[in-house]
Amino acid sequence: MKVNIYKSAAMVTVFSTVEKMLSFFYRIVLSRIIGAEGLGIYQICLSVFAVFLTAASSGVPVTVSRLIAKSNAAGDTKGKHAAVTAGVVATLMVTIPMAVILLFGRRLFGFLFSDDRCLDIFIILVPGLILTSIYAVMRGSFWGNKQFLPYSVIELLEDAVMVVLGCILVYGVADPMIGAKRATIAVLVSYVFSFIVSLFWYFKKGGRFKNPKKQLKPLFSSSTPITAMRTSTSVLNSAVAVLLPLLLMKAYGLNNSEAISLYGVAIGMSVPILFIPSSLIGSISVVVAPELSENYYRKKTELVKFDVEKSVKAAIFIATLLVPILFILGDELGQFLYSNEMSGEIVHNCAFILFPMCIAMITTTVLNSMNCEKRTLIYFIIGAAAMLISILALTKFVGVYSYLIGLSLNFLITSVLNLLLLRKKCKGLKFVKYTLHAVLVVAVACVFGELLDGIISRYVSTVWQIVILAPASLVFTAAFLYCLEMFTFRPFKKLVSRG
Image 1: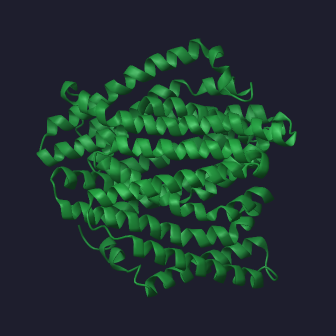
Image 2: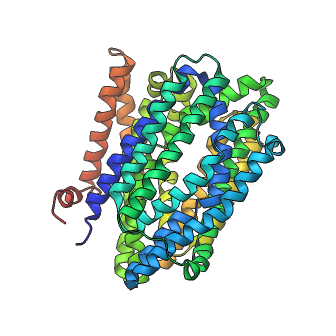
């Protein structure tokens, strides 16, 4: 039976949204219990750990998914199992030596942290390096086989374990260091959970380990550029975690705790709000990528073009709906969620980053599904260089906004280069007119929202501003899109249809 792509995307989106809401709630709890300093320490440890995690396995799940899609196109069941086995072997070859070196040579890695307290907390996560890397392979097998329900459930439960256990462990903690340590323990336990459950489900549904010899070469060939790109992302985030506090201390005479707190506000509070669309883009990517890969390997050119065009427009549509809400209510969200004025100010000022961010995310996934991993890596490096230059050159003038400006440049450069490549690979793609109309809609919706906010804010509290203005902005924007024929109810009809 043909998979209903709308139902699959909707299901993944619902689970992903609940998962992100849990994580969002958890960050609010952490910010209120262990404070900006504790959240900053916790965020630095996770950023550094992400470097090693992405170096070990980040390109593997996408590649396993694509190899499974290729095997499905050829009707090769044995090849599917061999691809999963190759993924497990590849991750173990990297993660086991890496974990041993980190555990027994921990003092050699103190230079990775701007705060000496972070190292002991970071070491807690090291055993999870092996476990979550294997889970990443299982996740790729779920994607390739279009088993979106088990993938979504496990992702949600993993997050739920972390949130529930983390809230229990940090409850009543006054010391930022102890709070960050206990929150990190909760992360490790969640990794153990997803590892066990994913393996159980893989074998229960007929998964097997087969001789990986034929799949190892294509796996390494495809996954290496993706891993390099995502590792570079993690290295970049870790560099920012070290560099930005140091530059803030130098430029503004802050002490270490003050700089870490400021970093925690920007990266731990504001950026997660701005990255809300990433869960929706991720849902689309998870569902579209296997379908796109199968059509690509079957040389169904028109279907590939259709999938690419719809994916890009979906990303623009998501950004169009959310930019006005964050622009209008950024200040209120910062106050309501974190009781922090600066976090809301950052969200308000940087809401327009959503456009290049959404386009860059979806087009990178699309190109990787079409065997363009090396090109996307090059494009990412160019964008990352612009981001680092921004931080180094602008921090003394604009403070933490240097990071947000750099992030915007990164996404903008990546999205433009990705779109140019897609137009070469898929002749006749149409998205320029749609994009221009989307920008017009956002501009009008922001003006409408600001005027309405100016009236309502005189009479209601912050909570009611959010309750009234968020749906009002959403309805206004959606109606405008509908009038411009940029939005139809056809996907919703397919959502409730059979098959």
